[in-house]
Length: 516
Ligand code: NAD
Image (cartoon, rainbow, N blue to C red; front, side):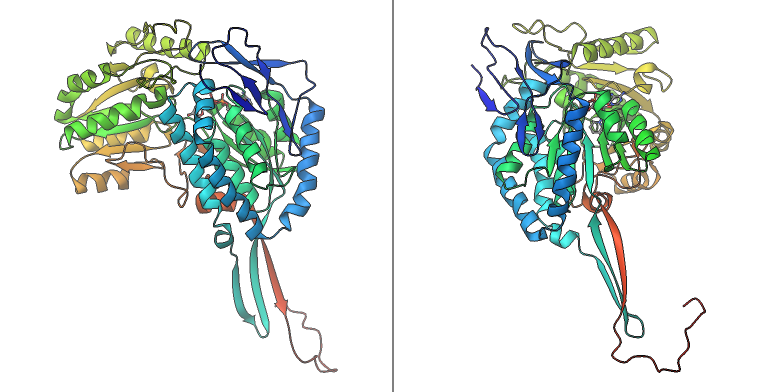
């Protein structure tokens, strides 16, 4: 039996036939609170489709309680010393490390990815917690003495107030950790809405934050879908929204939130191209490509999902397919699994439809994972690793974000042709080139229009000292997530100009009427 988790979000036992789904709680004012809603969403294990929990559609009144709690907490929290706020994150860092395995098991159960990959999910979020521990340096303002005689100006970065975060399903720990550590260490409070498809890790993290000393009300959690999102976009007390997810929801939240005068940062979909030059180190490159295309069953916004073989490198495709064939498909809880299930039945159907469209539109499905069977897990949402070659930019499988274990392969005669293809694609999250030529890499870096570039690095997600800089169709807003930009997003400037003069003016001095 997989470990029995005992968390406020819910209790469950994976194997027990008599398992009655527990309800996921709201997290309001530092307590797990049962929702009074009559509207619940089924939480399923993607490897079995067994119902493992019920997620509430938090009621309007409960959402208002969350906002009231965050508004009240803000006044005290923003005036707490920054060193004491940092201390919460020093402690949280060690608690997340302590509970790493528990968090990963919950992610595997609810999201489907393998345990090592789930630990990676937590670890990449943990790096943001560690970054938040240096907020006292990051939040320093600016100061200029003697802007005029006896006059000085200084600027402070101050918090906004109540902020909100709306999260996707694919990184249940990392994305909430992109949001609440930087939002709160800078003095804001935050209302999180995790994905209704896997809220468990987020619930565990806010419990850990409480254990680390975070005062009640600084982070609250509500649940649901559109109603919760509309509430966040419309509630006047919420000053800023961080969103990560699909294009449709991202554009909607950006527009609705902005119309209501809120700051919004919206990270959305992607189609990340990997360019394989014929001078690349062949085996290392193909291994990296396999991992970047099929890891997490392709459900990463920075997965390499379109591969452009330049010139002679197209001859490597058969060797690539042989490597892909060796991947094991299965439940994330199995140590031998390389590719877990996709998140839902609907997602599986959507992916299979795109594979079909490739067949109908003249591409070549060289390896077809549509009918994969996993013994003992016949009801799971499994799609086997799929390789589609002969793909042209006008095909559905190229135009749509697949978000599954499917790699589309294109061909180009030259590096410039590959760059041109990438620049014509509306997304700009990330891209990578594999080459042994510094000159090719430099040309690629200069000419390609994507926000994050890897050179012999397949998934170039920057550490939090930098920011996650997806651009074009993959991002809406001014300030990216984490790093300097993330800190800017959660703070506003207040600039003070002060005059301290020892002597008074002469009694006969006149007011200076001209603009100074
Ligand atoms: P999603 O947009 O379906 O859901 C994200 C959140 O928005 C959820 O909390 C959901 O409840 C809410 N939501 C969904 N549809 C909505 C709607 N129509 N109106 C209002 N709210 C809505 O996304 P997902 O399927 O959970 O996540 C996968 C997507 O996220 C992919 O497109 C992926 O590329 C993207 N993603 C992007 C990044 C990035 O940094 N660019 C990172 C991770 C995931």
